[in-house]
Amino acid sequence: MTFYLVSLLKFFFSAKCKGAKDNNHLLYKPYSNAIIAKEPTSLEEEIKEIRRSGSNRDLDHASEFEMSDIFYFCRQGVESIMDDEVTKRFSAEELESWNLLTRSNYNFQHISLRLTVLWGLGVVIRYGFLLPLRVTLAFTGVGLLVVLTSIIGFLPNGRMKNFLSEQVHLMCYRICVRALTAIITYHDSENKPKNGGICVANHTSPIDVIILASDGCYAMVGQIHGGLMGVIQKSMVKACPHIWFERSEVKDRHLVAKRLSDHVEDKTKLPILIFPEGTCINNTSVMMFKKGSFEIGSTVYPVAIKYDPRFGDAFWNSSQFGMVNYLLRMMSSWAIVCSVWYLPPMTREEGEDAVQFANRVKAAIARQGGLVDLLWDGGLKRGKVKDTFKEEQQKLYSKMLVGTQEDRSRS
Amino acid sequence: MGSRASTLLREEEIEEIKKETGFSHSQITRLYSRFTSLDKGENGTLSREDFQRIPELAINPLGDRIINAFFPEGEDQVNFRGFMRTLAHFRPIEDNEKNKDPTASEPLNSRSNKLLFAFRLYDLDRDDKISRDELLQVLRMMVGVNISDEQLGSIADRTIQEADQNGDNSISFNEFIKVLEKVDVEQKMSIRFLH
Image (cartoon, rainbow over the protein chains, first blue to last red):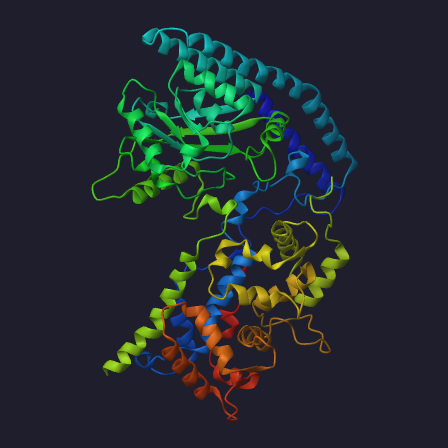
């Protein structure tokens, strides 16, 4: 496997160099994390600084409002237009150099004939050879899962059933892993989630589930879908208890919390697998964790998943592609390479509420995976930001104006 | 394998933008990629909604005014040239511009043009005067619901009183410049680029 990866990398590198020599155009964009430098100062500090530079009066007589105050908001606004922390998380990560997949081609300006030939060769290999092979494997894996779990469903509940169910699940997921040519490195397996616990991980794609479930057995949580997905879900639950919700039940937070806590209390049941971000993020950052899973009060096993974008971008941009389209793209990439870290279990501490606990877990996952830790809600992918954030800024600024007026009336 | 955007940036265009705005080649290509990522409709222009999709801008109290600054009078779409022209106001001022053409017009990022940008955020009707009402509107946007009308009114009155020199109860651009003459506009209204 590693031979395959190493030779691929050499291939990309040689393609890059050859192209660059032919022309003095840039073959690839200069890689940079940010285009502008942002100073992390607070509203109060910045505005005070602006005022200080503008007047030679003592700060004691600082006026309530200066016309220069808007400079702060002005610059913040234009900075966010040039580069903001959120919108770039919902589209695929930009690569340093092109990996010969058309889909990863952002502003890479093709130049040479050589590169085109290499690309063509890549297409033939990927679509002519790899894709059919992988699709067959995928069908086998899924088919076996459905059939075998249904058969196991007929067995009486007991250790034999659980054992068989685990084996079947593991085997089928492993076939699916092969179907994607996913090359996974697991770290710190001693921290693997145990029964009665909740496993939380950052979410990049539906493949996350396959990756984790091929190394351990989990109880899945999710909404019941129709179609093929629904068939798979219904047969899985015959073999061992997963938590599937009807669409109508998903909104009822109490119901969800009750079912989850009932499940974790039963120590014979498998650990629950949850993705608290609630949506797929592009694997450069971890966004806000929804606090629901952290209120339940059982041990949390954090897991960090990081994909290597050079071989195939695993991010599922659900507003751009449907599931089938996405899977086809996955199966026609070079490979899916990722690392999984099992982090040591965490529990909620005294005096810590669910939100703080969630943030603590999120920070640990971000640190391990080398991802940016953001407070923004993944829901911003589709929805508007709440007005409360703007109101906070307005409140902060008002304090600066009104605060001084109170001092005045005192003196 | 062209880029995803249907309109690639041509070298001539980059040169023109360079002359007009003073951005470097790499800054222009980087900002072009930003422009295309904001352009959800993929038609080569940005609308107000495209800007409002940026959460950090949506929570900025003056967000709408700033967005307005990108759109010329009466228009709803801004192309890449216009985008860059507005952003150019925030380029840092370099002391020695060796290739300065003596006959060229004032650069977009001069102190005076930076102040004009800020002035236009106040002066909504573009009549070159900041009236009491316009000042109140901006103040109201910045403080939200946290300050009463009377207090805000007195703040506005005081500000106009201090700045107004010709007694017309509004602030002209020259009066605006005078009030801010000691402020380090060059630094506060500039954004540092990493290339």
